[in-house]
Length: 214
Image 1 (spheres, one colour):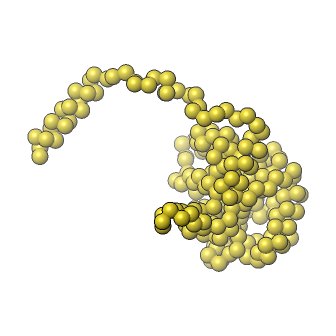
Image 2 (image 1 turned 135 degrees about the vertical axis):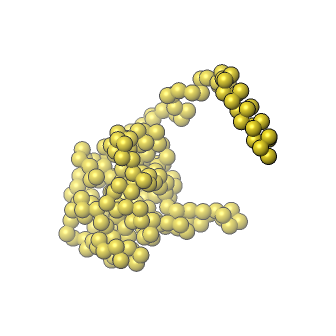
Image 3 (image 1 turned 90 degrees about the vertical axis):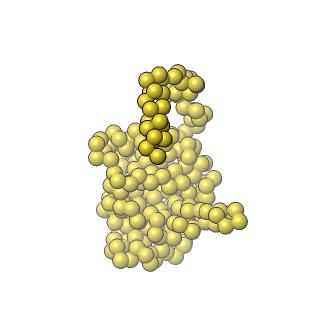
């Protein structure tokens, strides 16, 4: 065993002393392999997100956000709403009975969070453990509602990662989640089932404002 291991290490050392050229040098670089954005980034995200069974609402300001949010709550007859992010709770106003009691998360109808970024190319919501909502809020409830602002939109995953590095510097959150539509699986007979490992419904309310809810 020792001889075989020594032979492997020797071959690795020899290979490292004689580097070879990249077989496809043009594939390495900063250029994207995806098509460039050819429409407004808000439209791109909305199209990608809704194609993945997400539900999207655009709000011109905070007042319209509260109106649309309250209308949705009344329409769906949701009673138990869970939110622990102070800025988001403030945005929603006093008309909605919002709970921040962690004991109620498992039995709530809806969880409400902010996000770090929205990725337009994939229709993804980027969240992290650094948010006040933590790791669990967007996963345990049957319905997840994300409140985001237009200045949190980025085109690609790479841009989101760069934004996280710029925002947190060397203190990168221990968990970064890319949530792309409702939870789904096709493990059993390749039949798509929604809501197995997370929320069955995901909403994004995108607010046209310069300030952020983070």
